[in-house]
Length: 221
Image 1 (cartoon, rainbow, N blue to C red):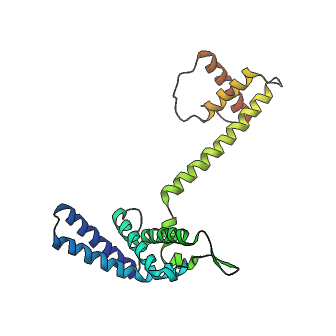
Image 2: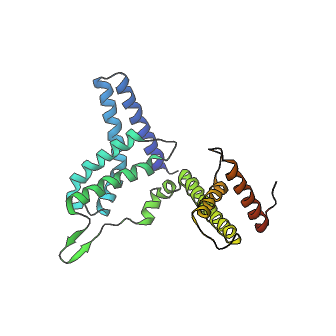
Image 3: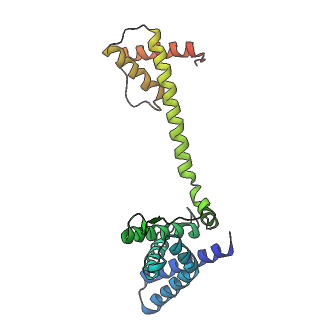
């Protein structure tokens, strides 16, 4: 990580420690320590605040932008979890959220200058430089997305296997056949037994799975 990121990490750690001490033993000296820690953190983030203020087209209301960014910094420090991301990436999103909300309150979704509509955009290179790529690489989200994709694929395969099994049984389609298809489809994708099947249903499932395995070339164990 860069020296800037390390400095921010050190500053937010000091601020969190000061706030913790204030909660344990309130007092003027401890409160002053917290104020100094916040001032150091805000000073380190000042160039970033100015950059985002310009990027969101809020230079003409810079004072308001600074106020909402101070709120964002307070919130970011209060909710920061160092096990999930570096503070440099986490505070970026807090700053952007507050500035975007301010822009929407003041100008709506777009700002109009004469006949030309102006929209505020952020440089992708600038965001990557700030560490946004590290924030986007969320292992929890990646695992969840892969699981959803696997479940979707398994569901489609089960649908095809059941449809082929049903076609091999003949053209008759009625309520009973549809119920049997749903039963077999469920048994193909269920991960654990949640209810005991009736003997007649177990017989249907056994015959269906044997037929599916035989035509799919699956070796049953």
